[in-house]
Length: 225
Image (cartoon, rainbow, N blue to C red; front, side):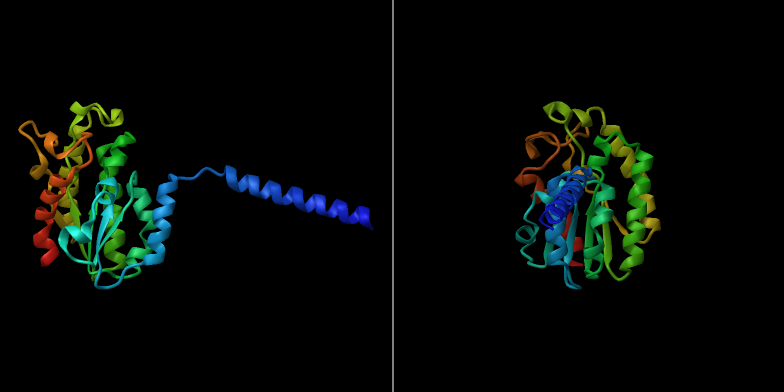
């Protein structure tokens, strides 16, 4: 009997180890930070008074509620996020039927060498989903920001300036046709050559404080309306 118990325990232990090993070796779609932040966002939720700032690292990098002086302005940005990642985690946002969503996405999709057309199509599908799921939410889609490759920081963004401009030109009419509001913030950040102003960034992609102040001023009329 003792021998049978030992064999049973050994079999159960082996099965448990195999299951654990299989779980641990399953590849994750996104990085650890994505799942950490998506998890807390699910717990926090939103409500009908919320104004949601939704996007990637550019959105993640700001204390929006302090910038606007409004505690109902919520940061739902995740560093490194792509359009597909936003779509996968948006359930807890649209479930709360927020008052407004300000969406900016696409930079990381560009770095993955996706075409402008495919990125615009993915963004259009995300817009459709938000509009259909929470039709009373005012959706604002912001243009992609310029980049500045003179910093030499992000090799995967090298030569992508025209791709970003192409995406903006594609999504503007699409967003308007789908009933969302288009906000072209791109020009406010450009230098004379059409690149991200070097005084607004320290890596050619992300913004310093003065850049966020410009962004705030661009959005303030829509935040207040």
